[in-house]
Image (cartoon, rainbow, N blue to C red; front, side, top):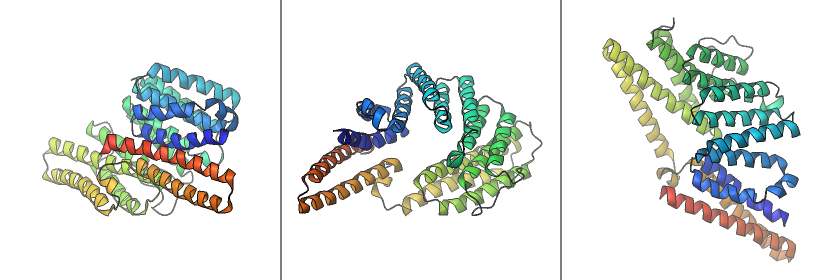
Length: 360
């Protein structure tokens, strides 16, 4: 029945998405293909979810190297969405960003950047809780500009993004709220990290009026912010974003101070370089020692650990439901619970196979 079909989507879609995010595209394609078997049912029962399925499918196709197919698919998807849901600015903006990534993977930075500009145009029309899409678009534009060598343009986009996050502040130098006094702290810190990256490159190229003291202050400020955030970041999505900002910061420190040492042959820069190298290693070791989950020691990504936990929780719940149904002799609920238990066990078996093949 249709409920059972939707159960398949519920169990396989998160698995396909997690594998996609981990760039295990062949494995992801298997589960996404299973989900797409119920395309017709989703069109009537949950069209919003179907947009997500299409999105993951074409992203997966790009990961497998079918760039033309995935780009054409995303273009058609955007065109269809603009006709059927012209006010769905968030989803349209999001799809433009995904299409930009596909063009970038092909090496077509100009087309990718144009897609981000369209994403920004859509995002500025968003109202309510999804307004942060504007920041993401501006940040993506900054990254495209960096890759194109347009560093000053990148700085302008970064500043615009910070101004969007904190419109009542004069954004310049380090003037954003202290940790604990605002939302979006990880986003703001990531923007500052990107700004520092651009400024250090411009300084080493002698193309900026910013001096070493200013950059030193930025490094110190970011180090302090990251230290505080590291102790207060609990949500999985925030952890993943934080880890990227944290790792990028230490890599930038090594690169910058190594370049200064080679240019000026001053021992203090070599010491700073060693500090950033040891700081990164120390942080990774501390995280490992604080982890009680054995899978983390084996290098299993958090996404798959979380997915396994969710499936096991679902199994426990459905077993409880089945016992209740048997106690009350509710044959309909018994059949429903047994069906869901079967699907969950299949999903767990599939995930176990993925873990054994990639992380054993």
